[in-house]
Length: 156
Image 1: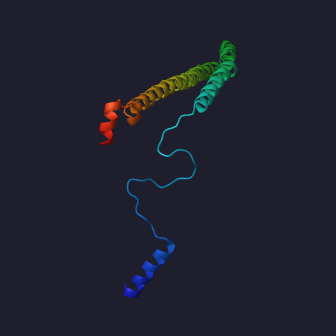
Image 2 (image 1 turned 180 degrees about the vertical axis):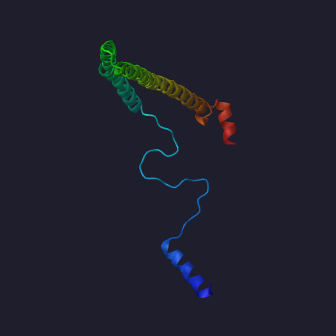
Image 3 (image 1 turned 30 degrees about the vertical axis):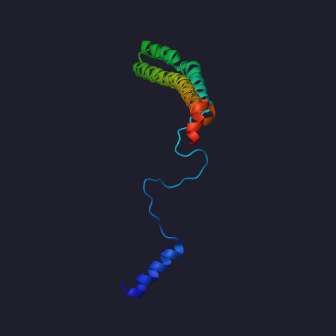
């Protein structure tokens, strides 16, 4: 590479703004809000909990209907000598197992959101009590609250 070419590359990079090195810092991302703080919105938690609960209810009411109907049809097919009856019974059994797993998952999500909401409320209360304790302690060390004899010593 010739010297003139090197100088041209440096000038081009300077015109483009170049890249800058970032140490211990992630690339800035769009959006607003606080940076670096975990924020939990109780409305979001309640929304997830409500949707999981609604799904659980709908699954129990609407998806469970298929099991008794399929088992009944499987029994009728079997008594009529069709091998399809056993296969349908097997499918109905697998459906029931999968449905129960899904119902359990929905219940687990709803319960976890309730628990998370409870824990964060307790954490918020703990932080509030600690911060208010610091404020009270800080006031005690304020020069305006010092005993009269101590106030003069602090000024000297």
